[in-house]
Every structure is written in structure tokens, then in C-alpha cells.
Image (cartoon, rainbow, N blue to C red; front, side, top):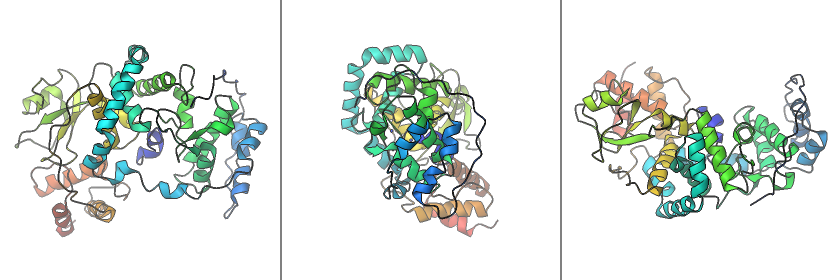
Length: 408
């Protein structure tokens, strides 16, 4: 699962059959905000579910829907372990991309692009989001609808709410899932999805469905509805029409790393060039991204890359979406050379990097072993402070040793 879970849970975390025609949503009466009861310590799963009625009532959900949703429901003991296994955060980015942008997925994407050419053209015209980005999301999320999830969404969300994974997030998503059922978008018996409650061809979380689903809103059974809803989501999140997601570039050895966000014209003046020999965009700004350090591929990322990350906060995921879309359109593979091995192969080592950076005053975020943009920026500032060249933000075992030897 990836999907729109990343849009909410991954503000530091971080991502998913036709069910017939939908009917218009029933208007919900305005009701005062409910109190926020907390289940008593040690509460059984059943009593916890019943404690949710005030929240459901405040959403205007009928008692009949509430009772049907939770009838004979049991906890799913397999769910919690899955929260620790998101590959976009645990694998080296090059290993992740090798699986995400496979030849099989590229070919399936090209077939999907041909099959839905008319719908994709209309969607791109209406929302301004390129068809390759929408196809990239679709391919990354469910391999073009080939697997949209087989978990009972209500059971998954209730389980995660009960164990309070990510605070109240999953309780709130559970309420939105009940609204989806109550509004007759899909029957209770057929609301299936990922272990974390993401649904349909492009894996919308329930709250995102309520905000961004368009057309017939049949994201489970209609690929055009799901693709339009995804484009609407990205457009609402700020996609800028005509701006690429990014450009793979070559970086001069004497680059000044003190500033990693500049205008494209400033990057060109600094000697940064596109690897394909073309010109950099004439307008806009971009962030230098070197996910494997100065010796690996380098990219200038625009604000549109950040929009992709609202779907899932992983850089690896967003690069997978962007690169898969490019490959589906016949564009070349990434030209830079990835490392042969991960310099920090264990989560314990990655956490140690973050601990050392925190000790030295460069890092104030969660110690989670996920070397995302916050950690890379902290590494770069450490490198600059220590006179390490290039200050590329790439953590290695040698750099970790240097951190441990450094005095605060």
C-alpha cells in the first residue's frame, strides 16, 4: 500500500471490480461537534467500536449503517506488522525503482495509455495534469488495476484505530469510510482495499475520496473515474501545467552546495546541464536532488515533484511515479549510475545517523531510520560545517564515523 495514506500519515511517514453505478450522496444535516471520547484503557475491540458512535453520529451516519459496518467485526491481527514494512522507506532508492519501474509495468502502462487514450486526453485537458503522471500513479499503486487490495477496509481501519496507530488518523478515516457506505457509493460487503484502507484503482483513502472523487466516483470499478479523481487531487494540490516534474542533470565538481534551491537560469549559470543535452526550462525554480550522492544520478526537482509527494511523502515513490510515466511515454531511463551497494544497509545505522545529527544540533525530527529530505538536509549542513566536499547530503558509513567523532 502507498496511495493517499502518504498525503496524511506521511507528513513525516508516509500511499490503494466493478461495484455498479453510484447514487448521489445524501445531504448530511449540520450537527454540533461531538465530544471526543476515548476508549477506556484495556477496552475490548467490541467496546471500542461502540464508543465510536458519537463520532459517527456527528458525521450524520445512520445507526443502521454503523451497526451493519461493525456487525460481528473482529480485529485483524496481521495488520499492525504491516505498518513497519513499507518498501519505499526501507529499500535503497535504486532497488525500489528497479521493482517499481520494471519492463513489465512499463509495457502494461503503454497498453493502458492506448486503451484509455480518449479518457486520458480529456482528463489532461480538464485538469492540466499530464497523462503520464496519472498513469504513473495508477501503475505504482495497483499495477493498472490488476490488484486493488483484498482487505475489508472497515476491518483494517477499525484495527488501526483501535491500536491508535498514528493517533486519531485512522479513526477519522474510518468515519469517512462509513460515510461512503452511508452515501451508497459502495455496499458494505464490497468495500475492499489495502491493509491501511486505501481503495480503488489509484488507492484513495476515504477522506480523499470524499474531497476529490469526481465523475461517477466509481474509483473501484471505473478506471476513467479513478484517473480523473487522481488528476483532480493533484490539480487541487497545486500542479502547475507546463512545468516538468524535474530534469536529470549533470553537476560540475566545483558546485557550491550552500544553496540547493535556485531558479533554472541560476542552475544553468552554475554549470548544471540536462543529461539529454537539451536546455533547462526557462522559468521556474528547482531543488537539487542527489538521492545516491554526488556520484549517482542527480535531478533538479520542481514544485510539481512536491505535488506528487502529497500522494505519498516518500521521495522514492514520487521518483517512481515520475520515471514510470516517462518510460511509458517512451522517454529514456535514468542515465546516472546507481551505487553497487547500500552504504547504510540497516535501519539501526540509519537511525544512528539521525541520532548523531540530533546530538550535533543539525536534526530535530523523528528518529525513524528513513533518510528523507529532512535527514538529507541535516547531513548536508553537517558536511558544510565540517568542510566535507561535496556536501551532497548523502550519508555513508564513513560520514557516520565522522559524526561520532565530532564535538557538539
